[in-house]
Amino acid sequence: MGACNTFSNMKSLNLDSIRESLIRQEDTIIFSLIERSQFPMNSPVYTPALASTLPSSKSLLHFIVNQSETIQSQAGRYESPEEHPFFPDNLPSSLLPQYNHPQILHPTAAAININKTIWDVYVKQLLPLFTAEGDDGNYVPTATSDLQCLQAISRRIHYGKFVAEVKYLDAPEDYAPAIRAQDRDALMKLLTFESVEEMLKRRVEKKAKVFAQEVSLNVVDQKEKYKIDPSLLPLLYGEWIMPLTKLVEVEYLLKRLD
Ligand SMILES: C=C(O[C@@H]1C=C(C(=O)O)C=C[C@H]1O)C(=O)O
Image (cartoon, rainbow, N blue to C red; front, side, top):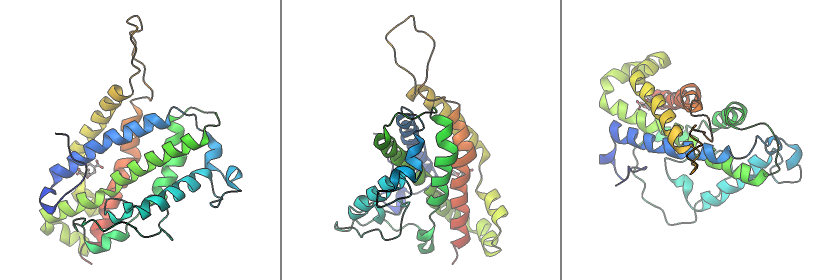
């Protein structure tokens, strides 16, 4: 049986099960980056000029994400504590019967949403790293690939809330004084596991070597080629995805005793 990506109940929530989910989410993130990388940068997708006749005049990406979130919100996506919209203002309510999502997180945590930062980091820092320069006019497939990447990365980073809850429950006596003192540095130190981070960086590079490898039947063509450079994965995780996950962890813990 494959590793499960969600929590069905409180009992299944421990640091091992959360890390298993984060490991499975690596696959989703790597595949979504590979899909996006088949298109060049297509920079008109991210600027207002192309979007001036659309209801979201900021950019085509803004329009596609906003409209997709509207549909998905009506279908109940944001009822789950694992999901965070990029444009939470004025989202319609779910039209579906309520699913009984386990209430694991401390109530004040619901408000933590760092998607603005994730959006900026993705568009300004990550995209240029793994897409070729250029414009091939495939704007809608490009923006829908971006939506997949953004949702996968956001879900992973906001999992920091669950990580933080479990770490707190495992050692409240260690965390409580730092929370009471609102000491960000002490919390960051407590929640950081360098060996886990180092293993993760090695694993995502290895996964990218497998997932992004060009498959050829031509035995003469021995040299391995990749759809995205595998060494980008430890960079993306080390510079942005893990630090932002830890930021969510700290933000969560700061509110854990409210
Ligand atoms: C997520 C965790 O917390 C921290 C963040 C990590 C990450 O984002 O992958 C890894 C190890 C920790 O430093 C964890 O402990 O698993």
